[in-house]
Image (cartoon, rainbow, N blue to C red; front, side, top):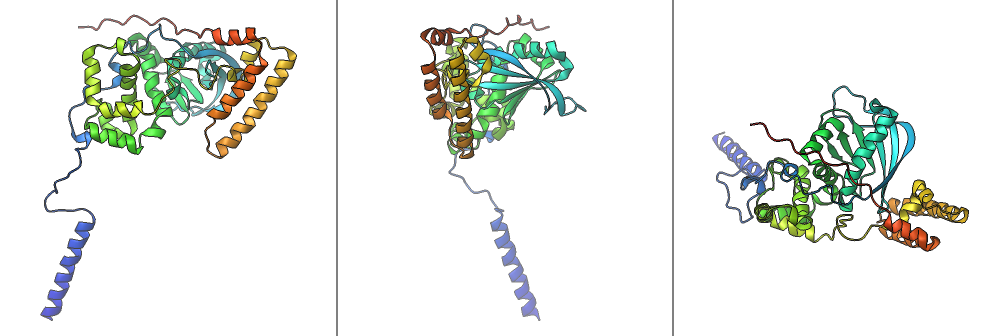
Length: 362
């Protein structure tokens, strides 16, 4: 009997040892050869990067925003951070067009009224146009509500609450905030879980901000991208000390962004996919170019053909840039020299003047 009991006891102990080893329980922590996780590393230099410098983007910077036209009203989904607000409203809709061919649907809460809704769209679109294409590219819709609630980004859109927007304007950080939110929309799903990004995170051994440190998978790309943008594309807007801090803190993440060959229009580089493609996709621009009847018919046909090709490519989960470039060339071939010149020299709408920063109360 004792032998059986002893055997049972030893079997139980063996099972517990094996189980402990399977879930990683150890009597003493093993020495790791891997670099320390960034979240256990040095204190981040900033709390949140949108507050670091109000001059990364200024009124002197160009905007790719071209025009906005009413598109009626419809019952559409509109996420609202304010409590007890319906998430589906009969919104005022607008179509915004940018000089690189991008279009967006602007959904404005009916609480503004018809004139107020258009006014709000016109306030924010020039700022949105100042963002580089690489963070604008996946924005299909912009949601605008009243309220002093945080902005948001992700999915295929960005969320704006206008009372908070006014606060950002007064502080001079509206475009910087929009870049952060648009990074969630266009960069997160491509890079936050990418092997190269995670390796860069680990090599750096630090985070650029307390916000990204607290939410490494959700906020690190957006928090870091704005600082990368400042160092690489607006180095004259930041002092040497700030530049050195950014480069010292996230050198490998900077290298990662450098390796992507990002499309930075209108900040730098050529338009993407092209200037004429906007006329294929946007009736308002065709009217502006004063196309004759024959041109109008051909452009309409091109637009239908392009829509079909894009649908096919999206079903195949293929890149649509090449087909847009192809149709851009076809569209240019239909235009006169004067129309092409008009297309190339169209001035983008500048953002409204920034409010002077209010002095801090002592």
